[in-house]
Length: 224
Image 1 (spheres, one colour):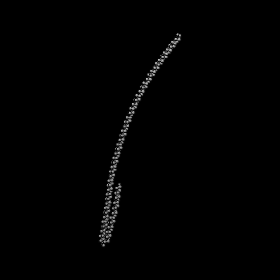
Image 2 (tube, helix red, strand yellow):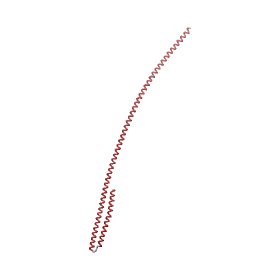
Image 3 (cartoon, helix red, strand yellow):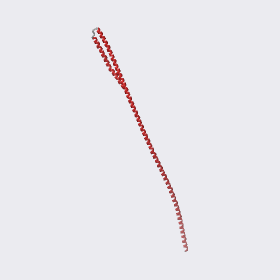
Image 4 (cartoon, one colour):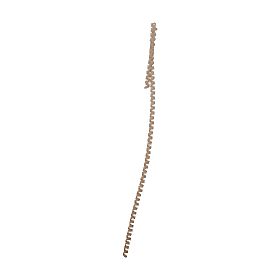
């Protein structure tokens, strides 16, 4: 559009510059015609000469008119040709510019599409890598948790076993202690009973001895 405007201005300027040329040509022709007529008039010496001069003036006028018309037509033709050439050049330049712009746009679009594809590929790669790493870390954490849980369960089982063993031993020791206590108590009771029996026997023996002694003393006293 910009180039077409320039072409129109160029054509206008060309027309404007041609018009004064045409005007100058017409004025020159007219002056020449007037000069010829004046010369013809001053040279009249007779009617035949006047007639000849008149005919010559008319012929000159006609020739001048034809020349003026030819010059005008030639100028118009030249202007038209220049305008046509300018328009054709502008159209050619416009076509060339449009084609170049289209080519540049196509190239830019292709590059943008390529860059978008590259960016999408990079994003996909990064996402895939991150997801893979996260999955790996989760798996590792799950494995560690499982290991820890297994170890804790093992320790709990071991502790429970130890506690059971300790409880069983404590019960056994208590039972043994109770049995020993019962045996000791029974022995002590038996010993107490034996001691009581011995004490009773000794007391009975002592009483019998005392009674015999008393009887013996009484018998001796009576004999005297």
